[in-house]
Picture 1 (cartoon, rainbow, N blue to C red):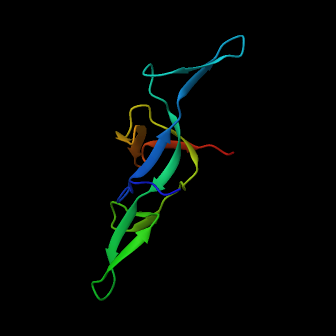
Picture 2: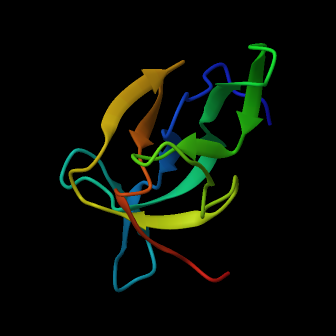
Picture 3: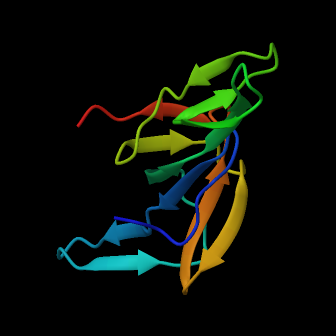
Length: 113
């Protein structure tokens, strides 16, 4: 699915999951604005830009430039369900949907599903 927003550099766009509680009778209650979720789905990865030998701009998909000046592939991929820091990243809203812009440093684990 194409999104209207594409992260750049080392940023990862994540759609947080809504917090849900199931009552004893099996009713699912969605809790909003109580706690920030810590799980979500990766929807887009940043794109780094580098130059080739002729100084032409080359786009490098699914990589980022690390602090040592090397292009490193992301560990996560689009569609991965991830666990992230409770207060990591930046919240953004697009077309009424809430997203988080995180870095891999904010992501703590990938669920094996």
